[in-house]
View 1 (cartoon, helix red, strand yellow):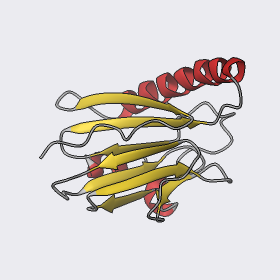
View 2 (cartoon, rainbow, N blue to C red; view 1 turned 120 degrees about the vertical axis):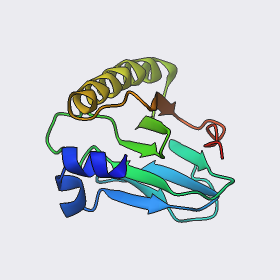
View 3 (spheres, rainbow, N blue to C red; view 1 turned 180 degrees about the vertical axis):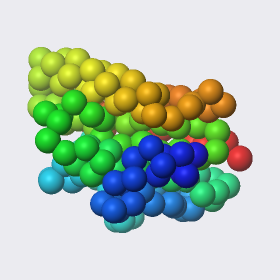
View 4 (tube, helix red, strand yellow; view 1 turned 60 degrees about the vertical axis):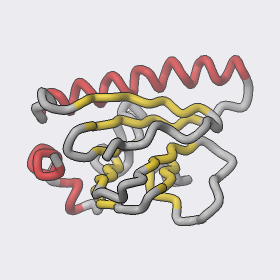
Length: 148
């Protein structure tokens, strides 16, 4: 899958948007400049993040999408994706200060996920992959692990 992503979006190599990780657990955050990255600290942050559990320590690819593959798109793409040879997960991270704000942010995030999935499906064949989308608003328990 990594080669398919690189062929579809060559700028992901130039912009250093795609990396591989074999840790048993890693955390993805959206940075101040809007580019997602792997959080290197040992404690979980107290703002929206996505935790990847990888007990078998197999290679998982991380792909920064917003502000790495796509720029200036008016925030219409999700933040990132994580994938292996079986599953491709799109992820959007949002911070909400109130319940009203949370609902608005969620509605925008759903559209961002949808736009990104459509764009990726136009360029990559996902027929043999489990395709998933995750929206993280505030703090949630760690997400499901990748099976062995």
